[in-house]
Length: 164
Image (tube, rainbow, N blue to C red; front, top):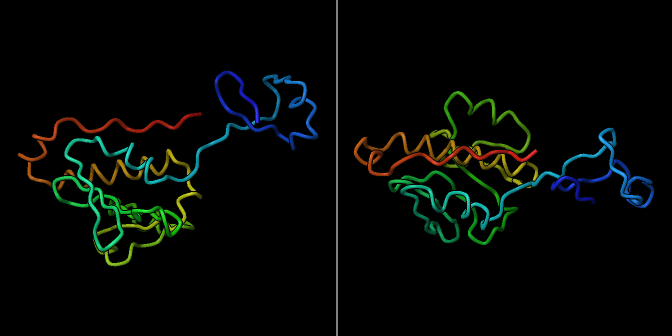
């Protein structure tokens, strides 16, 4: 692991056998990959959408942390981060089949007819990709609220940016 130009990198080989890692020589041609963040914890989820306009959070069905806008759910996860930290959220109708064809994404039990998906192992996905899914879910649910309520909420949250 190495810091270079403010980014964390993993060397192309095991640190014990890579001469560049040991010497600290990182040229532009060196085969390094930026270390990407994977998954999303309850704390990260709260930091992401906890301050979005109109968002409330509560616990339903015993142990599920539910984030809602205008009393309509847009993301659900276990309150304690258990069950692998699974995430359920709403997706656009035309993306539902596309996403559920991907490994690790299935129709959400009880909510599939409303076009909700479940990611059982969020740690297999980039944090930025999950954040984008959750923001999209917020936008979809918010768009179904009354115009008056939408207007009272203010501006939409900014699209999360993936860090290179």
